[in-house]
Image (cartoon, rainbow, N blue to C red; front, top):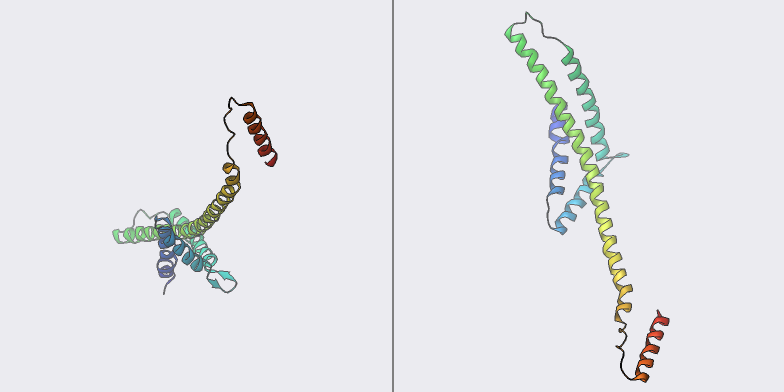
Length: 175
């Protein structure tokens, strides 16, 4: 298997498919399932490194190599006295190098995008769960204060007015 078949068949489709799956608004349980699969896939151990690091390394090095080759080929001038066959061969080689450049560029960027997007989603779910927890805690703390009865409206009777005032003072002391 040639180098380009490896890049096109194994380095390009996985990050493309996983990124699209993470972007689609599936139900919550399905999104977490896809996120779990993405974690297992990205951090699959390959010796001392993870799959995502190896893929970034391979696609990054191939991107640098192809960029250099495309640059060198772009500096070459086609001879003026070239036959149509030579002209076609030269342009085909140039087009092939440019195509390979964009394939490697897309592969490298997709791996980086998937890696960063995965971490952003994990952080999002952690923060969302923390907000839910804090809302529950806040609701528990706020509940006793709301169960206190509001002060009774003033009445014409002086004794009941003084008793309601003493109740308000007792409530304030408890707080």
